[in-house]
Image (cartoon, rainbow, N blue to C red; front, side, top):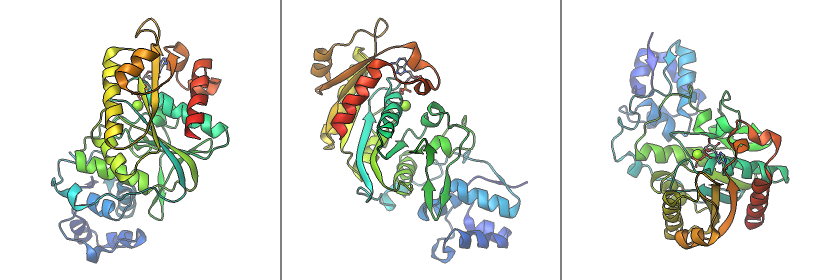
Length: 325
Ligand SMILES: Nc1ncnc2c1ncn2[C@@H]1O[C@H](COP(=O)(O)OP(=O)(O)O)[C@@H](O)[C@H]1O
Ligand SMILES: [Mg+2]
């Protein structure tokens, strides 16, 4: 049985399966405007339809099998000028209030933990909250929120966020068909994915959008910060020098791109990574110390947020809430 991977040329599909034309119509695509060399994935991107939707619709109609997202070297098949030729959209969409980035140069320091709990905390206060997972390669938010079996849908070319107790959640984790498949995308494709996840999502009215970033100061934050300047960034570190080194880069990146740093959270404090040291943290990162969170078994447990937050986390979230609103 023929497998659809997204890198087939749309014109070849039409030649082989003339009835596929109806899918373009259903999805509002005008094939006459397309170049015959375009692959399905480009067709989806240009028309702002999640590729999964396009492939699934085609597969259903034509009796084919979708291999998603094993689109062989999805990035590798693209010419490097793809990103340049398709300019990314810019500016904050109407309806979205504050945008808060949760960032750190280093991985595994607690960005996702803080992003998720901050979203839950603000939502419990009655705020309209969105949570955008920009860790495209290794998205964790759906797992952390126990949403791993849920899939994002799309309607009228808009991506419909998952609803987690009123929080609108968008993550690649809800787009991948199998969670253990590696996403291996080069810069331009990654940037395009980030653009689509943000601009094509049906966020509605939000008081605040919390954006969880992958580690590093290149592709994801650079793309996002250039499309839209967040209202503030919360930087996460541990007391270890290696984490503080990377947090200082995170602060420098925000300063260079004109994003206000709200401060640094010192996470995983205790015997293992070291005790919290506000003065040292401020000196090494150049940012305000916002508070600390101890390394504790409770936070490492799955779905820990169900049982309420430990006191230090609750205090920290209250402090962040006051800085944001
Ligand atoms: N204060 C803490 N105490 C114990 N475990 C923590 C704490 N903060 C985060 N973790 C755990 O550490 C791991 C890395 O945290 P995560 O939030 O995923 O980091 P990042 O998003 O920066 O990669 C996760 O498994 C998380 O549950
Ligand atoms: Mg993370």
